[in-house]
Length: 522
Image 1: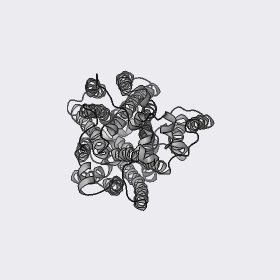
Image 2: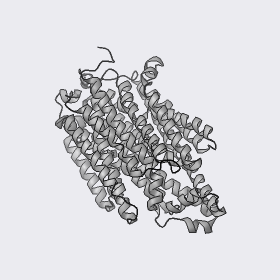
Image 3: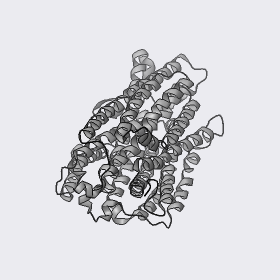
Image 4: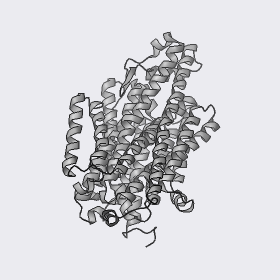
């Protein structure tokens, strides 16, 4: 059988159905990134509040993909696709409830939970699409998973173009609600593509493995990572007391222990989970802010153009994974190492840009770095842990998305607030007192800080000509953005160390190669 052939006659249709599903998620994500400034100006949100709303777009995904990954082999792909379709439509109704003139808290809650439900739908779809494509194309997982996930940057291109054309204040200036509602178009299309299709079983499901047996490779080690991220969610967005949050996390870990007969799990998979937590923070966490940051450093229109350009570059590059792996003889782990280095260099280059051309070059380097992270990590898990079925892929994807929401997006929002506030307060303390937000931003164990008020900052950015105090505020905001990107570059630097160690590990055991369940058992 050729590596380009699927194991089912409708393999290519299912591949493109999954492609359209993730495209819908990317369109929604791209549009939301472009309307963050609208929400900040309309409701007076701080960078920390906007970061938390953006973070809900990853946290909900985590619940969808983990729960979906655990049950998909038992209830079937079709039921999960229907559930995802329902959640996508419901998310639009919740989000559109936010209206100018409401209390800030009510608007925040509607936007937060609307984004959460949208992400829940996205996660449920990935719980279907990732193991489905991995099962359909077992001979060439890296290639086809990269094709599947090429839809994500394409969706961001479409979403970015929508914001660039319809959302331009000097152009059509269409309401953010109309812009966001356009993600429902690819939603309807993926529903049609999946309708009436038969689905194959994963290798683990076909072998008759129970859920507990599929969870054994994840074990206590891998589950501990997922449970800790859930503790952060219970403690943060849900506002539970710390003790209660850790108690729930502990109970979940015990449940996994009972199901797996207290299997420790694979240490290799544990390391891959840690790496993917970092992938989520640097790739998706940064994607949620990059349009806002580059638009602040340059101009909002240029930020939109740059976002579309880098997303289009990612879309094209994800079709090249097969060429890189086969013709350049680079293993998936080697590809991940190279990408980490590009991401470190790219983020530092972006932090220093002063011109549009310079930004194009810098973001191209960064885009090359982040392009292959997510799908290639999924391919590695599919190659090395076939007995886990959809579960290991889904738990790892959930950890990455939870990290993007709780650590990446929220952390970058906090960093923007902190660095901008420090820059303005150190140079103009009186102006800082006028422009600082009433609500303090906080992140993990770091000291809370009052960033810049979103409505006042938007006024300073829009003012022409600017007063000296408005100029000082804008300059402080830009300085904060530059420092934020430099701090962000330490994440892929840590990833590079992990991938280098993994390369040495595989060299010691005879090289990287996919395994089957029978091989694994032997």
